[in-house]
Length: 323
Ligand code: PBG
Picture 1 (cartoon, protein in one colour):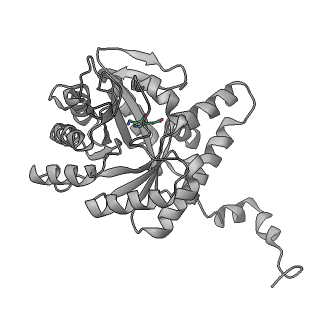
Picture 2: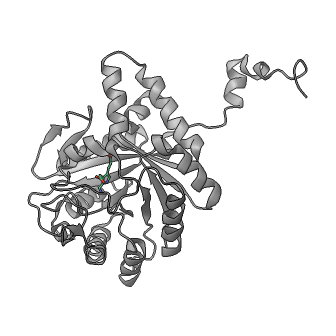
């Protein structure tokens, strides 16, 4: 039936009706807030390119988690800024390293908070690459050992979920086996499956002090031009045992999210990354955009594309606006 019988504007006339026929609604249940833990006490260093985000010492991370939980943000993704770095990143796996300590503190004081740990070496290596360097490039198989060691250390500290972001081949299988061998059969893995080599990570690398000291990450992160390859990455991670697969960044890759959602029957996450956040904040500070409406529209678009879960630095603001 076409015009004049059919008029799509009919369903747009009344706000109650508009709400009833809304297809996609983002809620705080969908969101994960990333946090950056650093050594010391009572430390809250602003991250200049990411207004409202801080490197926080563990005592303040705990306070932040209480606040987030009360606002309805019930999950956080942890990144660590260590006191010292090494060649391989194995220091991250020490029992008293920054992330295990942070996990234990959150679980002690805010036990209901669902704690996810990013697993990668770039914050912990002197060279800033995501793994062990051999002949000027990251060695895949050697890196798997440090990733598994980190994962075991984090689950022993009480983390709820492991999220490997390194892009080594075979890391999901390696981590799954390590978890199972240690009786953590119920700990899920959220794999950064299609993680692109992206300029949108710029502000994060300041926040996590993880910029590569030579070269770039193109030998392990994906070429932004490729979507078929993303499906292969996701397929392999599912075969290796991933419980949730992720596309990252989100906004320039909404097509990849949708394609994966149509192709695979598995929960999907999208990472609304630092550069995407910073652009919104900068334009809002200049008064060029309406921040609240833009954030709502962005998060809605990511969910509409097919993401069940959104990792976003907007989570806290969104929760405040939703109150
Ligand atoms: C670590 C990691 C990165 C991000 C998440 N985990 C940076 C990178 O790969 O360089 C980026 C997150 C963001 O930009 O918000 N491997």
